Image (cartoon, rainbow, N blue to C red; front, side, top):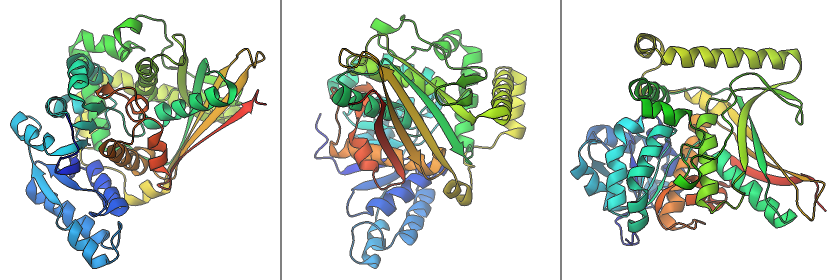
Length: 436
C-alpha cells in the first residue's frame, strides 16, 4: 500500500506524555512545520493544544522558515488528532492519514496492540520505544506476515534501546566486511552513562512486564529466552544469556556490571542478524554490559550495581512488593527528569567486534562508538525516535524488507546514522587491530 499520497508524513501519538513532549519539541526545532508534514495525536484535544502552543512559542525561529513569526504561525497550525488506545476505529482513522505513526505511549503491552494492528492493516509505517520483549514477540507472531503483505514497516526499539546496540553493530559489521573482507564472529558492547534518570513511563513498562510475567508462564519463558525474537528457524539455537553478576573485560581493562537493557538489546541484535539473512553467521555472538572502571573502585561499583539490580528484580517479581513499590516508591507515569538532568547527562556505547578470515588469519578487531550528549533515555532517545520516523516517512531506508515487524538495523539501517548527524548522537567506526 502506497503512503506517498498520505496527508501527513508523521503523526506523533502520545504527544502530551513526558517523552512525547520531548519528541514534539525536537521535531519542531529540527523541522518546524515547513520541512515536515506532521501532526500531534492523543486522547485530549485540550492537552494537545497546550503542547502545540508550547512548541510554537519555543521554536518560532526554528525549521527552515526565513521569518520567525511565520514559523511560529505554522507550528501553531499543526493539526491535532484525537483517539483512544482501545478504540480501533479512532486508530484506523489516524493510521490511514499518515505515512508513519511515531508513538511514545507505553506500556506498549497495555496501550500499543490496537495501534500496531491499525498500522499493519493500512500499510502505515510505525516506530516506537518499546523494550517489552514479550510484547514484541506477540506483535511478530500476530502481525509479521500481514505487515509483509501490506508493506507496513513496524519498527520497535527506536530509542536508547535499541538503536546504539543494533545500528551500531550494523555499522561495525559493514565496516568489517568492506575493509577486512569478513564479518566479525562476536561483538561485545560496553555502556557508560553519566547522569540520567528514569521516567515514570519507563518504570511503568518495567512493572507491567514483571506483572505479566508473574501471571503468565509463557511470558516468563519469553523473557528468559535469549532468542525470544528470532524467527522459527533459529529460536532453538544456543545463545548466551545476559550477564547477571560482576564481570571483567580484560581486553578493555575494566570491571563490568549487568546492563538492565541487555535483556532487550541482545535479542534485538540477534533478530537483526536473522532478518538480514544471517550475514554475520548462524553462530554470531552478541553481548553487552555496563562499564564500571578498573581497580578496587570499579569492582566495588560493579558489585553494588549487580546486587541492586538483583534486589530490584526480585522485589518486582513478588506481587505485594511490586505493588507497594509501584504505589509508594517508584515515579508515576508522566514524571521524568528535569531539563538540567537531561541536558547535563550523556552516554557512550563502545562495541568491539572480533573475527578472523583467510586474508587475516591472525584475527582482527573493529570498534564502533556511539555517543550521545544528553540523557540517553530522553534527550538522546527523542532524537533517535524522531529521526527514525523521518527516515521511514521519506523512504530513507536500507532494508531487504518492504514490510514486517522489524528492528532498527533491519527496518531502517545505516540511513538513520546519516539522519542523526548533527543532532548530538554520533556513530564512529575504526579498525583497531588486523587492518592493512
